[in-house]
Length: 374
Image (cartoon, rainbow, N blue to C red; front, side):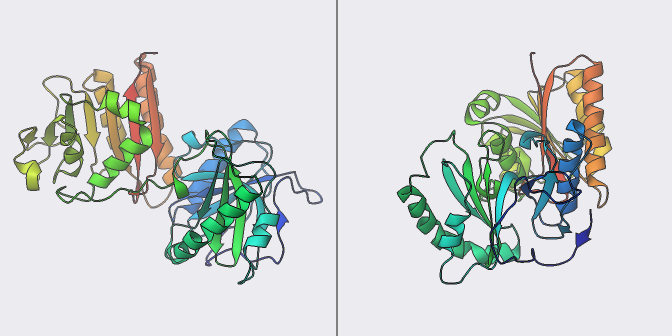
């Protein structure tokens, strides 16, 4: 798979169906559109194809990757993708058609003609999470009600969350990709992004990472059950207090461990005990409900630390970040997570672990790990 440096896909004049296309001497393929953070296209595609190879080693011929576009296209040969198990893919869309050279005066007609068959429970008009994509967002906001009205008039758009979502993705203003997503095998957020607003009294923007992680990894019922007032948490590498703030606002008492200073309200909050210690050397006097950790350290070292906390029974739930290297990100993430799996399975501990590169993450991924009863 090769990476080229250009701003978008080459336009084609007509609508081209992309499912089950067959070329002489090639395998039948289905194409999938995956959204990702710009700059992580190679990692997103590599991880998806690794997942596909576990089902069947033979892959279809792959489209060229385009760097820094915030999306990738992969071709599968009868395999499927599971969104829950993908770290770098924000959204998972089964592609239907590529429409090139959309006319300025009538974009509606060619899009309607290129839609997949069937009914849809929602329609999302989306753009890449790039500077070029942001410039298109005002267009999609104006165009959305026109397309939605046309679909309702034709009886294709029905308010039913069990039906597939229709996606119309605009890599640029003259090109559109149509496709569908399974509401039970995709992100519930448009563009795969759960945006958070910066609280005015939080001591750092890192608080947005934990806020997003809580919304992405736990539904409302789980949040109510697992983040109750009166619980306890340990925040390793807490300073200046962005992650501690998220726990405290839920009434959770926090032991903040960091040699650096806590700032703002977290420096004097009655629910915060600040211990000036090294997070890697700290051992709690008694078990806590939660471990949270956002330390700048090699992923293998952080994953070993968290695995020890769960194995020793020092916490039941954990959310932590793994800072990834510039190269071999997929391999580094896999090695760190496999280390945790090996440790907990050796101890006979049942657990659930989900990892994702969140919108508010940068060169890192966020992991949710919890002990389960079965």
